[in-house]
Length: 425
RNA sequence: GGAAGGGUGGCAGAGCGGCUGAAUGCACCGGUCUUGAAAACCGGCGAAGGUAACACUUCCGUGGGUUCAAAUCCCACCCCUUCCGCCA
Image (cartoon, rainbow, N blue to C red; front, top):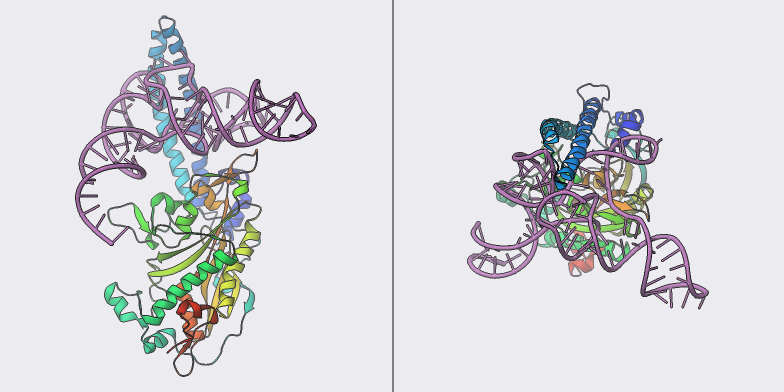
């Protein structure tokens, strides 16, 4: 959620930062203009209600004193009966206006950081750097590689659950598990993360805290009969561990990594990546989450991104780092880097990790605050990134490790996790 | 799912219609004392909105209700603990 103070005091600046996302800030029916109008109404009603409340409090105290002293207070009692009715009516109105205002604020995305490049589509994203040598020879798509080796079974996945589900068998199942272990171990042992294990179901408040709700309910799997959802990413439960807490500045930065399954309805993705394992309704991911100070947010983003890159490098997978332009940065983020891994069958780079700084946007929504010594509490800055998406990593290994004889070479770093297996045949 | 108990400030824990935004202890901050520290003593110390600063308003799980007045009484819901049932 955007900062209310800043919304009023830096209205024009913030509007400009939002306009760079392609949002029309002059549309009177748009959230930006509506928020502005609702704020005025809300504040007026609130101040009217407060004036009357002050009167009621003052006289009620007087009544108490008079009664205590055995004096007659009937005049005040009658007068306050009337005031009390008015207060109640005004309070209700003010509360309603405040709720409407907040609801609209919740739908306004995070203003972009000034360093984010301009752009109108993903074509305007900027390549920052490349790593590794992309292979350019003809490589079959991973679904053929996996099916031929008998380790990916898309038909079984479809039978069990529907399209966009896959069954992994033998070496593929083990590879999935090996990747999970390898990634967690690397982040814990080499990058200093504290590992957490969290629920894969989150309630509405938690989903709202990180920004998935209220706007993106259609992307989530909702549980029948409960106000709870399957998590689309570990970011949700891990960040919200600190929901409604005040941390000490000395506790920051907090760095957590977590493995969870992730569930996405992919409602708007009909026809995209229908074959193979690139876009699944359920996939595994190891996620990196930072809670830090406002000052450190941007520099910590570089650090976090580096931790994700380290995994790709250790697996010897060619990749590039791109910075998303204004039009492509997600709702809650202020700045985002994507890591894209080379897929030889498609002769292009595909997203395998997304690392974002959220500034105080999530901290404000989720009520996660920190206090400098002797200072006032303020929202923490949050960051997160995939470290990495495991299913897509598996795809990348199958394709980049594919040999002419149909076998797949396993990256050295994973061989110990595979029981010494060097290649899948 | 059934029964009982409970949700109060960073933590622990009183309060159970007005003098309570909340005793007390711990933690924390400032001071006295001390070569220094500890102890002891003195003072301060919740959050949000609002203000130039005050004032003022709101917040004792959440939402309603009763009352001139609610942390305190009533209703509903949520969560936690214990016991029973079921179960990996």
